[in-house]
Image (cartoon, rainbow, N blue to C red; front, side, top):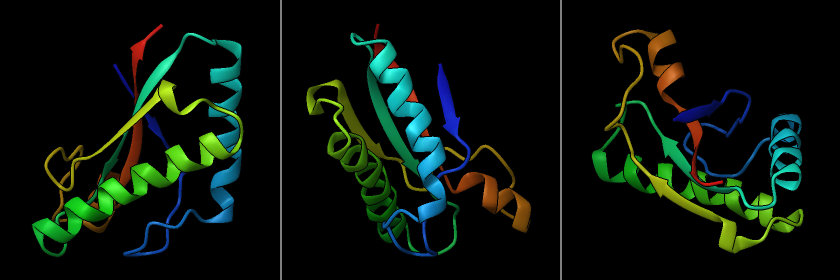
Length: 113
Protein backbone atom coordinates (compact mmCIF):
# COMPACT_ATOMS: atom_id res chain seq x y z
CA UNK A 1 0.00 0.00 0.00
CA UNK A 2 1.07 3.57 -0.65
CA UNK A 3 1.40 6.33 1.92
CA UNK A 4 1.20 9.96 0.86
CA UNK A 5 3.89 12.16 2.35
CA UNK A 6 1.43 14.98 2.94
CA UNK A 7 3.85 17.70 3.97
CA UNK A 8 6.54 17.54 1.32
CA UNK A 9 6.72 20.86 -0.47
CA UNK A 10 8.48 22.00 -3.63
CA UNK A 11 8.58 25.37 -5.33
CA UNK A 12 6.23 25.47 -8.31
CA UNK A 13 7.85 23.76 -11.28
CA UNK A 14 10.99 22.95 -9.27
CA UNK A 15 12.44 19.85 -7.64
CA UNK A 16 14.21 21.49 -4.69
CA UNK A 17 12.68 20.68 -1.32
CA UNK A 18 11.28 23.59 0.66
CA UNK A 19 12.43 23.90 4.31
CA UNK A 20 8.90 23.21 5.61
CA UNK A 21 9.27 19.63 4.31
CA UNK A 22 11.79 18.84 7.04
CA UNK A 23 9.34 17.61 9.71
CA UNK A 24 7.73 15.05 7.40
CA UNK A 25 11.14 13.88 6.16
CA UNK A 26 12.43 13.54 9.73
CA UNK A 27 9.41 11.33 10.52
CA UNK A 28 10.26 9.13 7.53
CA UNK A 29 13.91 8.89 8.63
CA UNK A 30 12.74 7.85 12.12
CA UNK A 31 10.47 5.18 10.62
CA UNK A 32 13.33 3.80 8.54
CA UNK A 33 15.77 3.85 11.46
CA UNK A 34 13.22 2.00 13.61
CA UNK A 35 12.73 -0.65 10.88
CA UNK A 36 16.21 -1.43 9.49
CA UNK A 37 14.93 -3.96 6.93
CA UNK A 38 12.39 -1.56 5.46
CA UNK A 39 12.89 -0.72 1.79
CA UNK A 40 10.83 1.95 0.07
CA UNK A 41 9.94 3.20 -3.36
CA UNK A 42 9.52 6.97 -3.35
CA UNK A 43 7.17 8.14 -6.08
CA UNK A 44 6.60 11.62 -7.43
CA UNK A 45 3.32 12.78 -8.97
CA UNK A 46 2.16 15.97 -10.67
CA UNK A 47 -1.09 17.51 -11.77
CA UNK A 48 -1.92 17.61 -15.49
CA UNK A 49 -0.84 21.23 -16.02
CA UNK A 50 1.95 21.50 -18.58
CA UNK A 51 3.40 18.96 -20.96
CA UNK A 52 3.52 15.26 -20.26
CA UNK A 53 7.31 15.09 -20.70
CA UNK A 54 7.96 18.03 -18.37
CA UNK A 55 5.66 16.54 -15.70
CA UNK A 56 7.37 13.16 -16.05
CA UNK A 57 10.83 14.68 -15.55
CA UNK A 58 9.62 16.90 -12.69
CA UNK A 59 7.93 14.05 -10.81
CA UNK A 60 11.07 11.90 -11.11
CA UNK A 61 13.34 14.77 -10.00
CA UNK A 62 11.13 15.43 -6.97
CA UNK A 63 11.16 11.77 -5.94
CA UNK A 64 14.95 11.76 -6.36
CA UNK A 65 15.21 14.90 -4.19
CA UNK A 66 13.44 13.04 -1.36
CA UNK A 67 15.76 10.03 -1.78
CA UNK A 68 18.82 12.32 -1.77
CA UNK A 69 17.63 13.96 1.45
CA UNK A 70 17.14 10.58 3.14
CA UNK A 71 20.58 9.34 2.02
CA UNK A 72 22.22 12.59 3.16
CA UNK A 73 20.66 11.96 6.59
CA UNK A 74 21.99 8.43 7.01
CA UNK A 75 19.54 6.14 5.18
CA UNK A 76 21.36 3.63 2.98
CA UNK A 77 20.71 4.21 -0.74
CA UNK A 78 20.19 0.47 -1.28
CA UNK A 79 17.00 0.71 0.79
CA UNK A 80 15.47 3.27 -1.56
CA UNK A 81 14.25 3.41 -5.12
CA UNK A 82 12.39 6.22 -6.81
CA UNK A 83 10.11 6.72 -9.75
CA UNK A 84 8.29 9.58 -11.39
CA UNK A 85 4.73 9.00 -12.55
CA UNK A 86 3.96 12.48 -13.91
CA UNK A 87 0.20 13.04 -14.09
CA UNK A 88 -0.60 9.38 -14.84
CA UNK A 89 -1.98 8.47 -11.38
CA UNK A 90 -4.28 11.28 -10.22
CA UNK A 91 -6.00 10.91 -6.86
CA UNK A 92 -8.32 13.87 -7.41
CA UNK A 93 -10.03 15.88 -10.14
CA UNK A 94 -7.51 17.97 -12.13
CA UNK A 95 -10.24 20.44 -13.13
CA UNK A 96 -10.21 22.11 -9.70
CA UNK A 97 -7.41 23.95 -7.90
CA UNK A 98 -7.86 21.71 -4.83
CA UNK A 99 -7.75 18.58 -6.97
CA UNK A 100 -4.57 19.66 -8.75
CA UNK A 101 -3.00 20.40 -5.37
CA UNK A 102 -3.79 16.86 -4.16
CA UNK A 103 -2.34 15.38 -7.34
CA UNK A 104 0.99 17.16 -6.79
CA UNK A 105 2.27 14.74 -4.20
CA UNK A 106 5.07 12.45 -3.09
CA UNK A 107 4.29 8.95 -1.84
CA UNK A 108 6.18 6.00 -0.50
CA UNK A 109 5.43 2.34 -0.96
CA UNK A 110 6.96 -0.43 1.16
CA UNK A 111 8.79 -2.87 -1.12
CA UNK A 112 10.43 -4.97 1.63
CA UNK A 113 10.01 -5.35 5.40
